[in-house]
Length: 259
Image (cartoon, rainbow, N blue to C red):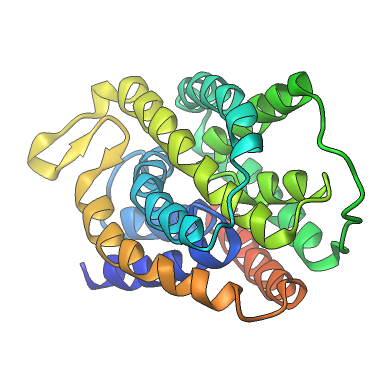
């Protein structure tokens, strides 16, 4: 229980700072805890539990960013439909992929995200907002990838939104808002696709461990506003570099866990 509470503190702060759902942090940690407890199908359960926890974490982060007027609602309305469709479809697909391959895909994704975070440069604010159909396609891609590796999509949506000349802090806030509907759709997919795995005596429904989700989100909900406060008081480029290093460490840890 203590490890979940501490994990929630870290996830909450990072969610607020970077506009992520926290899946990049939760999936490796959940996997290690579930494996240690001897729970079968640990990786799929970690993915589903992470997606469910993102609902609460992203909601807290989203509300805090909204208070700072850091959400581009015009972009959000265009991206979310694709997000929901892509997320639900991929959440079903993920349940049929062997744990080893999921771990490899997740580690590769984390490594690439780390490089992008660390080496990304500021984008000109003169760039135009992309057309509606491009926003929908982008939503499909972000939702699909996010569901498979069980993240809130921040590592994908923040760079995408910022590439349109949107201020990085508003890109982070908008990404946090995207994570909420994404997580709801993804959780539904993981519950349905893993329904045969349900064990109510162990508080497991589908591929969601309710005990892990509950204790993690208690603190993540409380600490997300702190992350928002921090990011609005420091240089975004420095924040991205620090998080890039953090993602790299997590990707290596997950990789070695399954080799």
